[in-house]
Structure formats: C-alpha cells, structure tokens
Amino acid sequence: MITVTNLSKAYRGAKVLDIEHLEIPQGQSFGLLGNNGAGKTTFFSLLLDLIQPTTGSIFNKDVTVSESEEWKTFTSSFIDESFLIGYLTPEEYFYFIGELRNRNKADIDSFLEQFNDLFNGEILGRNKYLRDLSKGNQKKAGIVAALIGDPEIVILDEPFANLDPTTQIRLKKLLKDISVNTQTTILISSHDLIHVTEVCERIVVLDKGVVVRDTQTSAATLRELEEYFSREIAEG
Ligand SMILES: Nc1ncnc2c1ncn2[C@@H]1O[C@H](COP(=O)(O)OP(=O)(O)OP(=O)(O)O)[C@@H](O)[C@H]1O
Image (cartoon, rainbow, N blue to C red):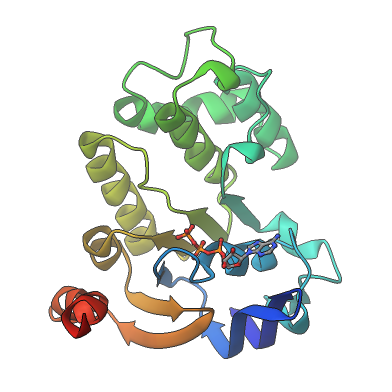
C-alpha cells in the first residue's frame, strides 16, 4: 500500500502538485492521466525521492519515502533515460541491476527469454552501448530492467511514448499479465487514454496538480475520459 498525505510540491511559491490524500493498495494497476504540466512526473519523482516534497509525506508500505531507503528494496522504476547507464551494453546493464536485486547471470538470462518478441532482435547480442540505442529501444531496456527481481511496486512514466504500435500492444499485454497474475502494484502515467483504460483497473486524473477524477475502470471509462478531455475544446 502506498499512502499519500497532505502532499504538495511548489516551485518559487507556485504549487504544481497538491494531493491531500491518496491510497494505492498492493496489487493495483494504477493509471495516472493529465495534460502536459499536470504534475504526473512530479508525483512519480516524489514517490522515488528524486525531489523533496514542500509539505506532506509518502508512505510506501509504511516506509516514509523521504526519510528511509528501505522502500528501494521492493520498488523499481523507469522514468527516463537517466535511469540507464549509457556506457554499458543492455546485457551488462541487466546483469548489473540483477546483482542489485540478488539475481545471478543465469537468473537474468532466463528472465530475459520472455522478452524476445518485445526486443525484436534489437537489444540483446548487438554489442551496442545503451547510449547508442534508439529512444524506443532504450525505453524497452529500461522497462525490462525495472521488472528484474520481482519488485512489489513498479513505477513507469509514459511507458508507451516513443514505442512503435507493435511494441505498444506487446507492452500492454505484458503489463496486463503482470497485473492479473501477480500482486505487483503497477503505476503508469500516460497521455494515451486507450492504453491506460486497457491496462489499469483504476485511473486518476490530475489537473494543475490536483486530483480531479479517481475512478475504477469500467466499460464506460474510455468514453467518460474522452468527454472529460474534450471539455475545454467544447467550451472553446
Ligand atoms: N524544477 C522545476 N522548476 C520549476 N517548475 C517545475 C520544475 N519541475 C517541474 N516544474 C513544473 O511543474 C509542473 C508539473 O510538471 P510535470 O513534469 O510534473 O508535469 P507532467 O504532468 O509530467 O507533464 P507532461 O505530460 O508534459 O510530461 C509544470 O508546470 C512544470 O513546469
């Protein structure tokens, strides 16, 4: 369970995130939507202690994120390419992350087999450094690395952006399978209403840093979200 209380982040006095209370139960697939600048990355950065809150706290399984490192043993993430190590090949990077998560080379080799289709022959065995991969392939490597070691909580910022349509479909299936078959909590942000409604059982919408919708996904959710995000156009 992740619990957020009185959380805010302000830059030069201007609040960019303001969440009074939010609970994300273990095992939930949680989608975060919002227009540009809504505060999605800010929220994930606070969850990962990459920035400090102006007020409030985040408890990740009772660990106060800004005060202890304990949460790192069961939480993993891919936010952007800065999470990668550019001078390593993907294999070297996966083994390195494996070591951090108590997985040996053989564990990693067998873990990677399930991603052959996703990697499409462009990631493994190419002797290329991560920094030389395309943006989409870097993202694939980062997402897969975030899944190493069966983390209890996986946080992915815009995982579908920059991926080709085939990969988006494969990634959706992968995330859905994890969500259905394990107790992993998955948090993803996206601009894509269809992907989020397909993958996530709960969808929270941020607008200017504030939670404006918090719904369990149903057959009506996609249409409701389309209406919500069309509002400003309609009001014109
Ligand atoms: N270091 C910073 N200094 C000042 N303002 C910042 C800083 N970092 C983020 N912001 C502001 O915080 C607000 C929220 O940004 P954030 O990146 O969280 O939005 P987002 O929902 O992830 O947007 P996008 O969909 O464009 O990725 C924006 O107005 C942004 O300009």
